[in-house]
Length: 292
Image (cartoon, rainbow, N blue to C red):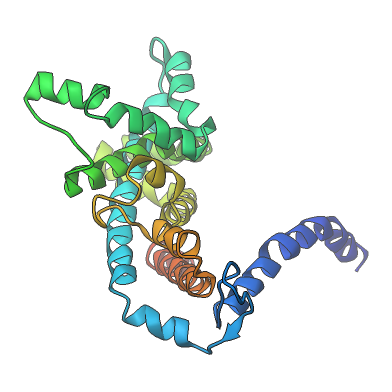
């Protein structure tokens, strides 16, 4: 009983911070989502409109389009980061010349603020001065202008996100790989298993919890990407990179539609929780059932 009380005392500071900076803001956003509110209007009072904001979402073509491009962005970005991050983690498990220097350079993007990342990629992709358009033109005869090509803008935002966040995936998977016991791998090699069999039947099941946690973190971050995209493309051209975070930003700030923007935020949170639950059910639940 005393140890239980001590545990709650030690957790109390974290729970208090979580309540004031997590729970209360969410409840306030939920409250605002049931109102029509423009705090900069002549009459800044909140007007209760029930579920009108949520009903409007169903028929909002811009919102539905932003959901579609966001899902595509999250899928390709997170999948690419996990694949590249795993191979880099495996590479860092071995010794090679310049390993320490390469790992330091590889980790540098993590310490950059998102707005700086967007600025760097904006400079690198500007047709007149950017290194990427110049290299593509000189080496392959290709013209890159993310202000004109929707596909190019979409791909570049994915590449930017992969460049920014792959180091996080690499570091988490390195920690998972280092913690694996050597006995199952030695036994598998003695039994004649090849690398593919070892990966599918030993490595992947053993790092599955760390892998799922990494995917959850990246999925939630990718769902709410705003800063980098606003700096790089502004959500354009057209709505090619108007991801859901960018859509919320443009509804809340330029249009000062706080009630509708809050409703979108609540729905996005709900969708994120559902997707994470589906991933957990699909990746870890069968594993836990086999253990049981």
